[in-house]
Image 1 (tube, rainbow, N blue to C red):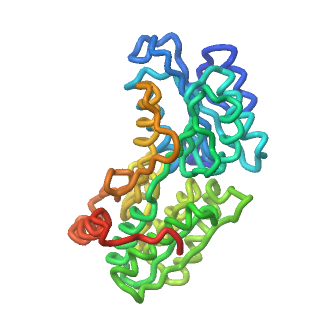
Image 2 (cartoon, one colour):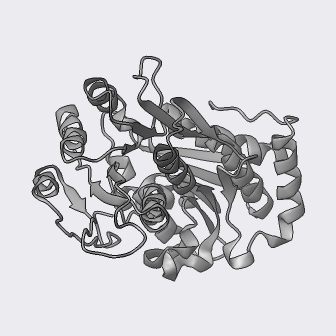
Image 3 (cartoon, rainbow, N blue to C red):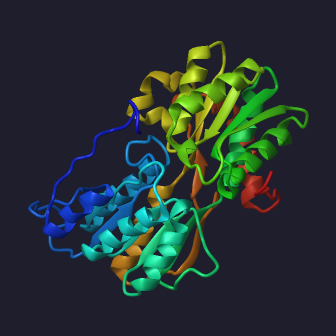
Length: 353
């Protein structure tokens, strides 16, 4: 995160090419002198993070876990580059180009904000494999793989949990940026809650609208939005807002008195920077970006990359609900029933509010 929750990442420069990435916010985690599983594999993976970067306790960290697994299990040399608030399309393109010119292949872009940049740089570099998380374009080049998720399905389960745990029958949703992607979270959450109680009230707040993407990296805005929903009577609040969600979790934890937060993307009750709030995190809608990242890198290593769209849904473990703390154990049967209805196709979860 860009505030107190931002974790430090080690910077190890391994070559002149890697050092040149510093100009576009890169962090090399390459260690050419190590004699671990990776030495001699020849696999070099570049990752360009969304705003918030490694250490956001959420979306980017999930992608980072997949990258770390590629390093440990597949012997990949890895390099990371961070986005900056308020940057231009040219900045995104340059970040991707720098990874390519430094010899990284594949290159993974974390977040839909990279779509235009990925399309352009991939077209100019047809021999490099690219992946983009959370986005797909009808005209994307054949060397691009879109890694997408059925966020609405996991969010439906979060809504079922929220409705069953709410005492006030009044819950909240906070979206980082008002975009088609985050609306999937909202739609699923609301549908899940209303499947339990059609009369339940759902507060909805978005922190920013495009082209302002700072809503994914402003814990202060998240805290303020959550406080506003608490003041209106919401007692369970789900945030799909990147590191801004940490502020919402803080507000809920401070309120106490049976108020619950629902985390997103990572199991946020297990994140070190959120440890002091873990007793107030009901569950998290875990989006297994790490699984998608690792599977893509492995497919490159194995020479069987699937271009186009590869979606990860509830049935194949792409999304799930965390059970850390045991706070939803008492409603496990209800969660399991909703899961079965979705995976069987009996329940069709909406993707738009």
